[in-house]
Image (cartoon, rainbow, N blue to C red):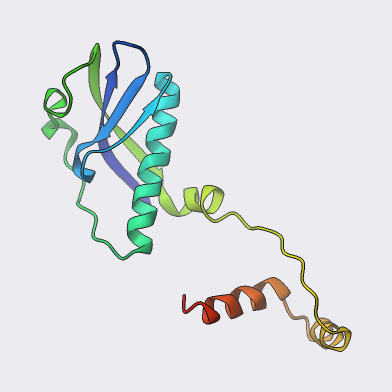
Length: 137
């Protein structure tokens, strides 16, 4: 599901761009270039929304872009504009937050043979067991 929030982009006098999300407790990030600032804004928004979801926190609804006062958020900048930042948090998390890692483990030979004979998905079984052990279900 696509999440879209307004963000204020500020071109700094010393160079680079600061980005602030007024609706999200003034969540902010920075990029050396405008392109980098937009990438960082997407990452920042995805990380915030992903963490809030994991922790069961309520997230405020996004404001309409026309209701954002870019001058109210920050006062030391060369120029500024408001832009909507969009991210599919679930898809972004799969690529950036939920990367798989390879683990090597040892089990008895007889157990391996029985599992293979029964078409057991070792990764799935280990993930399920770890979630249960850690009370993450």
